[in-house]
Length: 446
Image 1 (cartoon, one colour):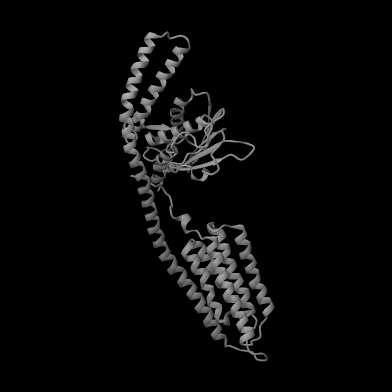
Image 2 (cartoon, rainbow, N blue to C red; image 1 turned 180 degrees about the vertical axis):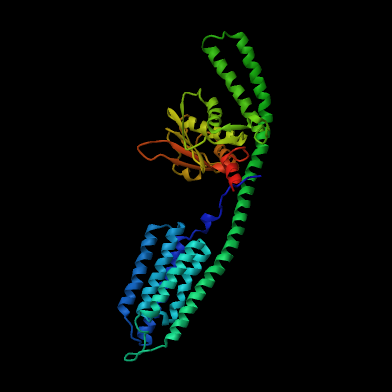
């Protein structure tokens, strides 16, 4: 079963789209403009028409700037989205200040930003926006232009009526914020559960399909490898060990043994040896992974930069295979060096794999790790298509994510070239099941 460790799968999908906020603001501005025109030219009421239009025009220019700056699918983080909603509250406050303050019937529109925040943003942000709205309503209760009315006449409403409107707005905002937040939390939990289920099912379906392919490959490759081994041994007996033929035969024998080792690793991914040697430090983990890769003409450098005790994990064939695959991929495309940087502190453990090759192709850099996506320019094949099916990184990424890691890929910026893969664990996830780990110590302290 895939263990999703402290991952909020639905968080990004809940972020507000800039396109949605822009469309809602255009709708609000259209309503404001129509209300001003009807009040001034149809009803003939007196109001500061010019300043009101300037307030509406300011929001229109903001919308135009947002449309030019962001794409249709861009989403805002919580703080920028909160700033946008706070601006809408302040813009409505300015417009109400010019048109009667809290006595204006359209003061109920304050509830719209509160509702949007309660559904899409955190409870803390919704609370702050509600306080901002209450402050604005309170200020408008005492300071505002007169309510638009017939020329030469002034509409005077009793203060008790204004106080009633203030109370209605404040209570409605608080009720909507609490009610919508509770409903949204339930919806988010369900959405997260569905997203996690869909992710697990999708990944498991891919791996299940690969299981049959791996079994067939292991079965089919067994006989040819045995035949090649026999032929190599016969040739070693017939040909001298010294000279170019002997070197080629030794290399061929080494590669056959490596193929057998790879098939053996595939069959051991789900097994647990259950011995005392299962626990290994991060340094030992990296050395075990890097060891078989050091004889391929590329310098491999391991740099350790940690704060506190070095992390210890249980021997996990999935982590070993995943890291080994990523390092082997880096070696294949590196020009001269692969650099592995291990970092840790009390909360995070990360491994960064860097190479000085050409980097990931620009059109797939954001899709690295998806199945059947070839990743980089292969200097040996002289083609951006490479020579594989694009399944290696998918399998490695899936196995690492099963251990609780997140995998991120990027290219170095000019003038430096090369690719960078960052694997990050929460330290509690990396050390899960290890006696004496920081996570265990925290549990004991609690």
